[in-house]
Image (cartoon, rainbow, N blue to C red):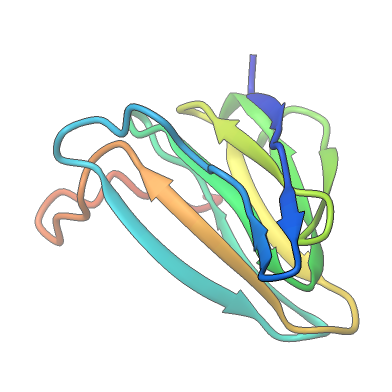
Length: 125
């Protein structure tokens, strides 16, 4: 299995909207936000031990997933801030974000903090 998708409950009222992204964040996890400009991609790597959760919080983009360290066929997940989902990406799954024509903003949580001396981040050979 390369990933799991959980549809998030979007609660809205006159003040705005709210949705929960990840419950039970592992100790030592890291949370961060990144953006993808229209016509560009980010990621294109996999991890051997880390699990990541991704949610689009602004705009929309495609998440391209390839299991078996990028050798398996591509699966596409469309991410939109207006229809939030949390995508849990398992180790060994190459993940690449692509935004066609808008700036997409992604909230990410990874199961362990980045360590420059042991990044556990691999790109195509």
